[in-house]
Length: 171
Image (cartoon, helix red, strand yellow):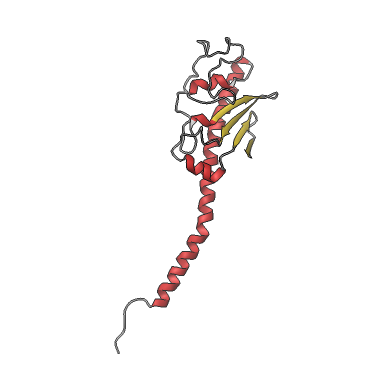
């Protein structure tokens, strides 16, 4: 009697079924990991902005206006779509020579994989400040901005207050 070598059709179908089940189960896990990566990038940059604000507060006794961080690059304010004003108590607020560059921070430092500098903002509040990452696709020039929009939506923001509390607000 001759013995056949190889796999039967039933064995091959079972292997295909197992691979299919594993791939279907892993897709939601992968999507969750991508969303976590997007959130991690935003929170990391918001934390850096928070640190800059705290260092400025120690030196000057007040938090920086949104505009002072404009030395980082083309970051926007809610009202003017540009960071062009001087910090509080430092000039007339019209983007004059009173703005000093933050040491060690250059344009492009806050550009990432999922968010570009244009997404970040700081708003002064009664208690201190909120560092904000806007989800607006018109502001986001990052390489994977489409993934950000697909995972988090295109309206809303991720924000961190001066205490490090993070909120995700979508509309």
